[in-house]
Image 1 (spheres, one colour):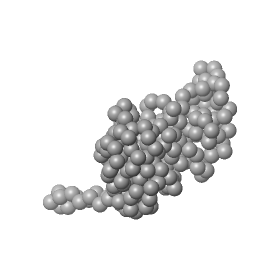
Image 2 (tube, helix red, strand yellow):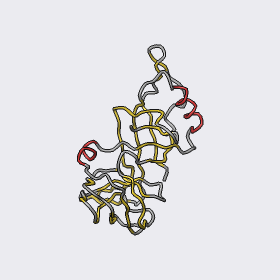
Image 3 (cartoon, one colour):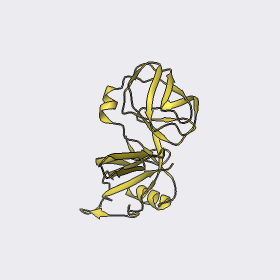
Image 4 (cartoon, helix red, strand yellow):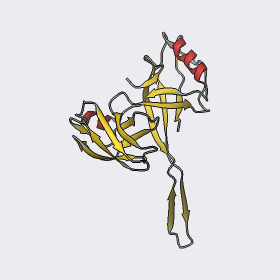
Length: 196
């Protein structure tokens, strides 16, 4: 189940519509001859725009959680996996990864099946969430995006429905309660920003 995680359980499930967007500073300029020049920065963060499952019972937990987190305290999101990648995945074992800082590849060990491209992954000792850019069946090298923020050496890699992302509420998200149809709490669309 994907959603806001309080350390022991998901207290608010994510529901559609849902967007997971890569925010990376890119500068584009056009010359007088209309040639285009694109410059990319290495900084990158994920931004999640979603709705939460409307709730009646348990809404008090979410309300208190939001007040405690507000806009500056980190909260944990169980990252929604790409549906196609989730259905294609056959790997189920504990996997470790090794890679150099700044690299866009990591070498996997312990993999017992397919980890498809488009899978969100996270490495032990890092808070950054990455996504696979190539398929890998078994052990070997897999491409990732963005480049590694720090080196990993035989670090445990989460890649199933257990990838946790530290994030904060965007300042446009209302911290409070909104009730519809009697006792049904529905906050509408919220936006979560990855902490980098």
